[in-house]
Length: 96
Image 1 (cartoon, rainbow, N blue to C red):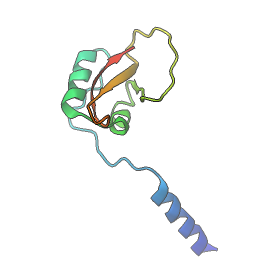
Image 2: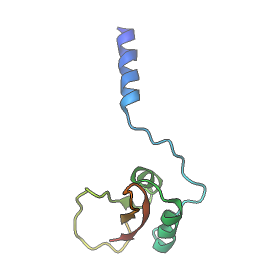
Image 3: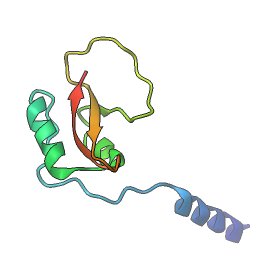
Image 4: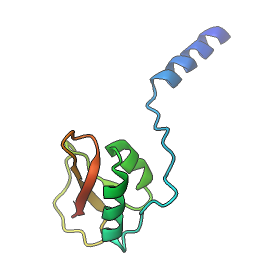
């Protein structure tokens, strides 16, 4: 029975999505300074997954197919990103 449990754990570990990128030393997570955060995104050009991990403590990064409510937020808590021509890297965005 032990062998089966270890095998199952190995399969689960291999199937789980892993984001291995560590936060950059100077990452721009400050909702009081949205221009600085957008400049940082333009400089770093992260993927959607990396941006969500790096910015999770201060704002929600909305994906291209994600449905959101339309209430007015003035606290810069949702970032709607702009992508490059490959649609893989974030190059800026707007807060709504």
